[in-house]
Length: 175
Image (cartoon, rainbow, N blue to C red; front, side, top):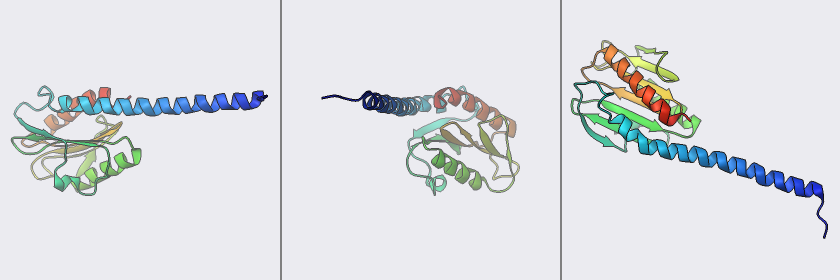
């Protein structure tokens, strides 16, 4: 039985290509699983949160009034503050789902938002003087969308918090 060299080389190329694709899939899956494990400690890190806010609960679900229309799949986190408001984080491996979640979040802010260039890859900010008395920011960084609603916080403190959170998340979700 003779095997042609061309057939043998083609078979080796298919095996190698499959190994590269599997390796990429496995690496992406492992890095997202690692992010799911590490995200709660970042969200609950009191050094990042404005000093007068107190964490009451971290849930693996989103408040119903913010979750309407969000794409299925991905991981959801919501950090409640005793004073009201909270911080939500949506982890989507799929770019289209992430984009849809970002759009839903920014649409929910209503009129009067402005982009912030140094937070996330994209972000929209609603000042506490425009909105319902609490500043809100929605930003996207790599595989996550973050929505922060911060009661009794000045705009500058809200933006500083979002920058700190973005910096911490960058090391976890971008990779």
